[in-house]
Picture 1 (cartoon, rainbow, N blue to C red):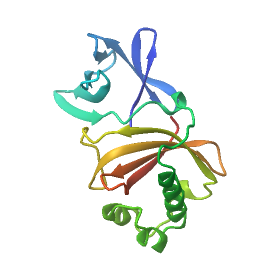
Picture 2 (cartoon, helix red, strand yellow):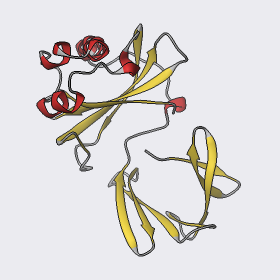
Picture 3 (cartoon, helix red, strand yellow):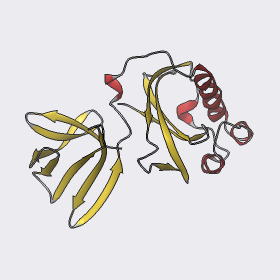
Length: 185
């Protein structure tokens, strides 16, 4: 994942909350690196929202779908689907246990169960609560996780026995968990 911020009329990539590389504008949606042969262009959807990043470096092109807004811009709100949040809590508990808890859960896509294996996921151990922040429809953005096409990305704030963390949940078209990521922002 890549995070961008605006700093002094330039675009900077952020790693661990610190500026990484600086890019200067060469158009409304295009930027070039001041230190390497790299260029970014953002693609907008029909509503004018950024939906994709196209990166060009050394003659090669890579594309990445936009997953959604930065976590620090989001405020907790009521989940429009409270049953889904309850399902998520149970799924996180299963991930914290690992083994048969995940394998026997109907909340995970089959390929995700295989990818997670029998191990407990340390980031899920000790989850006390989750607060819904945002839902992003990405069904038109070709996002895949563990061989499952992702239709929605859910954003949560997670209370655990360590500093506050954020959680991205990737759902397939059937509403099953295709993957999850803990992120700083």
